[in-house]
Length: 298
Image (cartoon, rainbow, N blue to C red; front, side, top):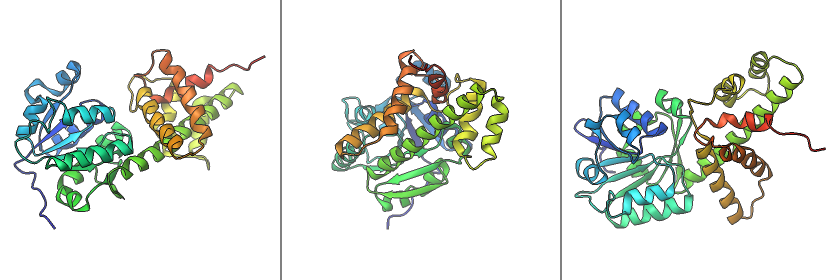
């Protein structure tokens, strides 16, 4: 088995400085690991710090391990293989750790292409919000070579101390989408239960506390319940557009494998109403508002 990669003198690259990318940066900063980052959004670069910003080609030269925290599979592919991409300009073998929630089939293809170019690819989607990731109490889902995961274990312990090996590249994305399906339906059920009780005249904060002390309690309640009760969605931990992207992947896989997911269709319809109202950047707890807005048809 290959020796572990030592972090002491390494610089880690991060592609994508959104909510999850910023949480990875926080984890690495706290561990005193040098970080360079890239993002296409000027605001993200500004908040990250211009002195730590690097182009993709600069990352591929200065870093041996690069974390991908972008929106979807297409962005992963572009960042890796475009003319200005990481692997087109790499001067040495790279370890690519993809933490984005992606199409499992596409992940397998991108990993194969990465390997063919002489680089390594590990899948590490994160189950948990950006806040949970920053605290270190999320779950990392590992897909790929166990040998590579062992080589990178020092870094992985910093990024996500809690991990579970799922299988080959692609399987971790399948597990992540399965988890997100359950989480999304939990959010919808919580929103509907709160709506029901409030419309019957119950106090929302007291009702949420009752839920949390009952057999219906879940981690979703703890994280999303207060946002629904306060009707405050402006500081997202997970966004409407991200959730809908994931449910689009879920439905595509379901159709490919002839799986019927009736509740997923209802969830997608409810959250899509918020996206159509220009609220894709807000927290997905806003599904509570989608249910509030429903009217009984005469």
